[in-house]
Image (cartoon, rainbow, N blue to C red; front, side, top):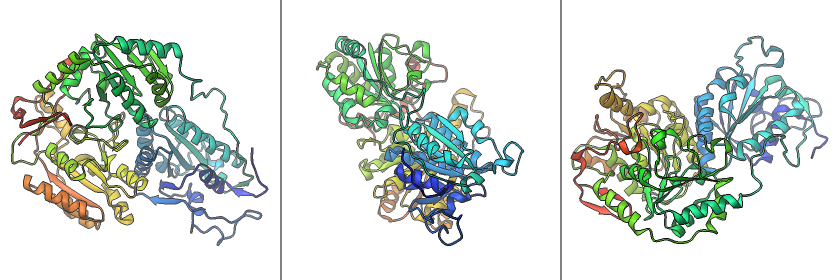
Length: 596
């Protein structure tokens, strides 16, 4: 343990902890209870106003980005963490400031994203007395954090912060919340830093891959005639891009990625089949039902992938590579289990794999793709959302980060964009948070300042967090927003059409003029009302050095297919309607159908 003889305020201890953890970026909003944390930021006043006797005046060169709502601070920190692979950090004050973080924390928890959320709390004497802006944020966030703590003693701050980063970033990552009363942030004490974090009962890593399980998995792969790799978010978290590709190429196995696994395997690779599940490729869902082996890597067999669980992959044995023991056997019982980090497990497994041609399997898959070309853009002069996303791909060639919200546009972005660049797709998966697309684009742009960030938005989700356009304009982040504007809550309308007798209640939207709205924030606004407008506005946006909002006025009642009906099995997938099948050519390289 290291220490020195200096006295630090609690707020300074938080900053010193950040420096030791390599933090240089915070998203947040100040309030009365967390104001001491702002007072020690650079140009924050420390060294100008009097400080407690014996305390060394110090400013901290950490970038703080002022958001307009704490939920957006959490989402921005979430995307920052996904892009950098480091813990994202966000601030909130007590009461409503802290509770505003909750949706963002829950989103990170569901998607296994490392966050450290630091909240101010009312002074210690008022805790439990219903003080002004008091909320039990520790109790509220117990179900949606890996760990949380209310720190009541200033000398405990360094330990709490060090443990917060350790817990957030090790094992299966996730959010941690540290709640500190304002008076504790103002108290002084000595800074103690542990040489090594050791938490009794917390064992984020295994002692190595079980060799017997590796041998069992390798034997199952060798025996399989119709295997599929299901690659999930864990591949991206562990940076196992090369390892999962080696397994696929070495054993000659096709790869399907979950929604959060997209960009974990090259989208134009000949072995890549796309996404399965609720809005996955028709051929993938049928292939899963026909497969004799599924190799799940860093994924949890959730309901969006499996469909009706009792009918999932009825002919397949299961090999599961997973770091979280709670996920093993929770939904699907595995025949072989490699518990641990995906990268480490794959490296060990790949030592025991040999090549097999699997000609009959690939012939069957190719025939399925020809019969059911799920990725189609039909001939029409209307602006189709699929066409918009495909044209963004053509303009960028995939050399960008794509951020989405939740809904039809999210599924189309997963279907009609090809992600060769590792870890280039940022979306809300488990919680399905509308509004994620705006603040998450901010976090992605801060994390990758020299890269292009496209935020593909639904008009409904965009309206939920559009106040952050003020933040984007303030920092002049060159984010390109593509609003897929169908003037309706599209996915909900689709369900109403298909399953609720087309009773369109509470889904049509009265939207503002998004071009004028962007201009009001000082941002370039563009509009595409015709198909011929799409390419030019994308080109204009790409050439503009600042942020851009594009209003793509797309077909109102376009549905997102394929689709697994609620409660149905994968082999009951609804395919594209017959009118869509006007294929011009099939590209074997990108596994897509281009039309018109």
